Amino acid sequence: MRLRTALATAALAGAAGLAYARWEAQSYRLRRVRVPALPDDHDPVRVLHLSDLHLTPERAKLQSWVGALAELRPDLVIVTGDIISDHDAVPVAIDALEPLFDVPGAFVLGSNDYYAPTPINPFKYFAGPSDLDPQRAELPWRDLIEGLQAAGWAHLGNTQSSAQLSAGSIALRGVDDPHIERDDYASVAGVTTGVTFGVAHAPYTRVLDAMAADGVDLILAGHTHGGQVRLPGAGALVTNCDLDRSRARGLSRHRDAHLHVSAGLGTSPYAPIRFACPPEATLIEVIPDSSR
Image 1 (cartoon, rainbow, N blue to C red):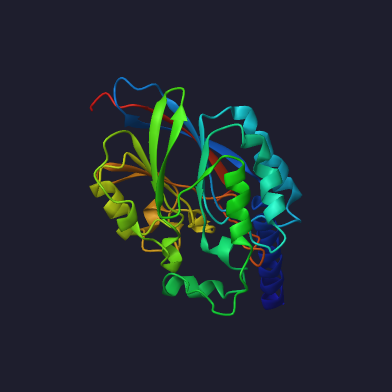
Image 2: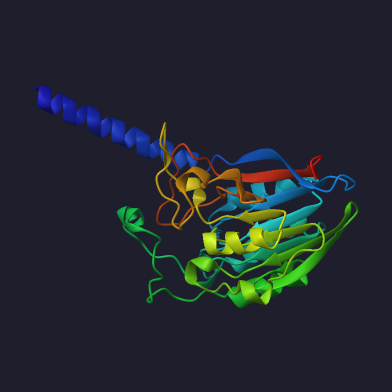
């Protein structure tokens, strides 16, 4: 009798936990942080950091929520990849982001923009970063790039650009997704000469090290989902890259650079859950650093 009661209690707790995790995956939040990364004479810059939307045609709530972020009136929008997760999601992504197209923006792609997601055993993440399944179908990533560029946003896949803002010019440099070894930092390398933001999808340390060594002021990345499942006292269990778990989301330092890793807004369609790690966008207020 006691065993049956215990099993029933465990089953109910498991079902309740799963129901909560599915609800949390759609409980979108806006986080605000301040980063002292500008010269003393530079006006503040408000950066809206979006990542890992994993949009599909069915995710109407997320589409609407993202579009409403235009009300924040940021100075710059940076999107750090994994924008789509479905062959038919390019027009969905363009529609969701369209209210923000009046704002200067830049983006990189992630592996889920290039290839359709497939089911994966979640315990494999404990063995290290996931490998690219050669059976994954290619997504229309060229159409995604074309659509975002047509809106005036800069594609930073292994290239450089700049954002002309009312507060001044911001140099931008980015790499294609390090998680699937498409990064070529050498093509954008060089010591910075002004305020510079670095952009990557996955925060692999080889890219972070190189950007920080060149004097990049702020590095923005995503990919980790903040761990997606976090436990009290332990935090993120995995990062799916070689970044340490303590920096799976939020603001930290990487050598002399500031690093912001977004916990992202979506999930794989095959794992639509989050636990103690709600989906988020971040409004980063980059302000003068009086110590510079």
